[in-house]
Image (cartoon, rainbow, N blue to C red; front, side, top):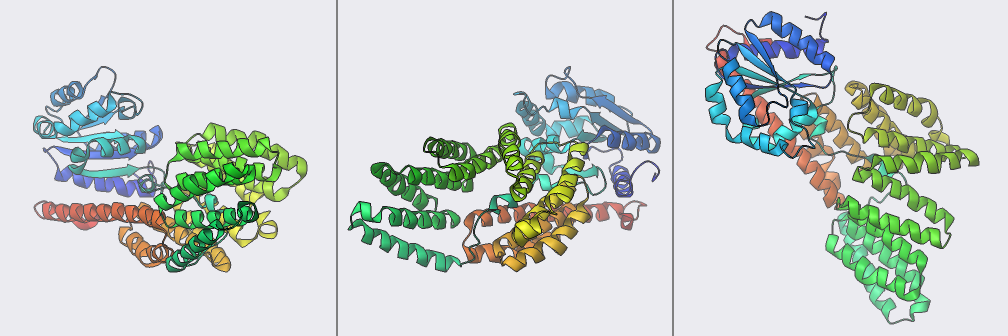
Length: 497
């Protein structure tokens, strides 16, 4: 066994055989998670040797509806010990309008399916196909016997269900560690100042008024006070800038609007606002501000999922410019942004990930400690951990975050970023099946920080991840309890798992 499969997959295979014995001569839904054909082929070869009577079927274009596939499964089940279903990553094509209908029919017919096919069914699924099944066929998903991961050693799978946490968006932001109470007090003070300014001459107070509004909008956005931020932008800041002919102030307002829409996860609107900011700054030839806005536009494209346009800005716009200027720090930042674009793609190749790791280790990180400081170095080390996770090197990623990233951020006293890194460590624990550790870590070291800061958007993300892991923990405990109960009636020793 170990000659064919890595050690982690060998243990998963033992667990699979245990569950197959428990479900002998009974319907059971086995979700077989894989990413590469080589992983699946190794497991299939072992299954065929260990499971006499195993049969296989390929879901294909001849199965236009779920009933076509169910009928073939029913016919194939006569005398079968189990049936494995291949080709589902194509049959459940995310871009096919028929896919939700197929999954809905699977979900609706789960009772009849179980009655017609009295043997275990092994559905081979990629992570992407599994997410579709969970989203569109929740009731069928809840009937699963178990899901079995045959991936590269320690390959991340559960992170697919957790929200992405991109520290790069905090790279050029000032650290604000004031409590929610102090921020709200500041908002009240700024509001009073704005009313006092209203009695003064507009030309005398234009710059100060824009500064006060900017401060208020940023506080309202960080606190999740969406309506207040909207009103300040659309009813105050933008009209004031237009009335005064203040093109810089108008561009700043659209930049703040983009920040607000990004916080609300309205990424299309964020791109539109950034694009307007860039055009305004280009028109008045504000070169430094234009460069910063163009960088933010590239990040907005990436957040929206438009990786092509994001990479075009970084690779064809910024990188040649910074090389020509000889600015090593900004070359390093740009290369890091190109790596972030790579990680935002659905399935980067192994070669691309290896190249990204080399760029970060050899070209980016050596530059930053002297030129950019601890905080930028920590954020880039976290990006390296992201790359390692995608390569399946989860232990190395966790070690970098706990040993290097968090201590560096502690030097800059950025408790918000430390809390985000803690959340990424918790996500790593969840990928390892350490759900109790993940839940406890978020509860003790992340959620209290976001509550103190009044960061409602961050709280929503972390609490959603907590809910996912609590559900996974409950499912795991229920499966173990059921397995022990059923194994008590068999000759199997549950301690084998």
